[in-house]
Length: 285
Image 1 (cartoon, rainbow, N blue to C red):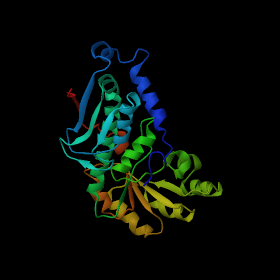
Image 2 (image 1 turned 90 degrees about the vertical axis):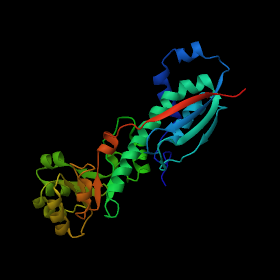
Image 3 (image 1 turned 45 degrees about the vertical axis):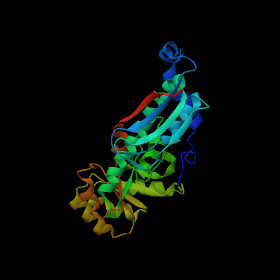
């Protein structure tokens, strides 16, 4: 399985930037003013709703960054399902450090687990159809690597990570080039060595796109009846991806048309953070 490090994620840089954003120039003035420097606490991190976990290692790393001696027991791996009330992590360490790291750790874990949880719902909705869920580049600027990682932890496959990962000709490219066939021919002539995918939004564009050398088609905002027509026309010549207007109420019918892939921007763009809490208990003396 591809890890965050394999994707080029710099954990140390992420921790540094996130903590700097939260601490500001003066640091955690509340904890410094109210908590003795040597106070120690036990903490239990619990899920307050059923979730698919993502980012648990990053969350733990925030606490380790501020207290190298902290004791952490992680109970779930990324990609695993946790029920409401499940203990995700147990910690014992310096109270000031834990309180200072708490929000950065929880924000990250709640956001990424929210993406993974939503992705899992979509994956479950199309189980058995043969269709594969894809994410998109609709991500929060600066968080693409971790958000796409979270989508994968929920069972989705990653589509393009960056613009240089593949040629994807969209409607505006087609408009500038003067047509689907013209755009595909231009992309083939560029000899990028990359797969050429083109967006089509009507049946009449399919044959010209294939004749021009498209490797894959993105069927945009087509109703299930039109998708079935497209699947029959292409007849397995290239993979087909459905996109646009996809939600939990529509994805099952879309998957049943026979398309190979379904891309859903909302799993990274609109996933709500899940509810995870960190409860502290005074360490026994």
